[in-house]
Image (cartoon, rainbow, N blue to C red; front, top):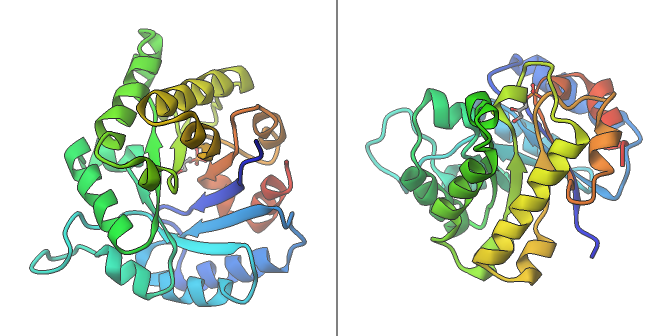
Length: 251
Ligand code: 13P
């Protein structure tokens, strides 16, 4: 079965307003593979501008790096899914390891956030991944399966059929150490099996699973050639137009 190919850039807390605008303009000027869906996750204050700029070209979308678990109200500093939707975004990153580890987001909060995302017709890009200690103690499959089950079990087959998943081993994020194609493939295959157990083969074979963690223009082709790797969630290398476009063209 042919699945969607996706390359997404998570800019995290980087770029100024003008750098963000320049980066998008530079990327749009490149000749990139039309079969690849491109998603940009800039910081919140730039979402409207980035969304408007991307809207001129097909296959380019914007998304938010996080959203509130609440609908609206007295939650100072929070940004709701409906606000994100109203500025033209289509996607929201949920459960990134930096949110889980630094901001102590729990599975229950991730479920509430995804409920808000779905309610506002946005697509969650749900992230999972193990810590170095969990891999070293050979608990990586168990950790990732637990992260998947504790959240996905709250949703229907029809809802999950619209999700995107991202596997980001924490030890590979921003470290320059990438999962080998073998490590990526065996985990992606494990994730697909877990989705199959929770739902049906049809959902498991349809859902895109992205790899993230020091993915760059040098290793992307090898990673994307793995059977169960449907693209990448790129951090550092998404901040340079040339690198990001080379990654997009790595299938
Ligand atoms: P790096 O590509 O910088 O390792 O970051 C990966 C990531 O966390 C994307 O969400």
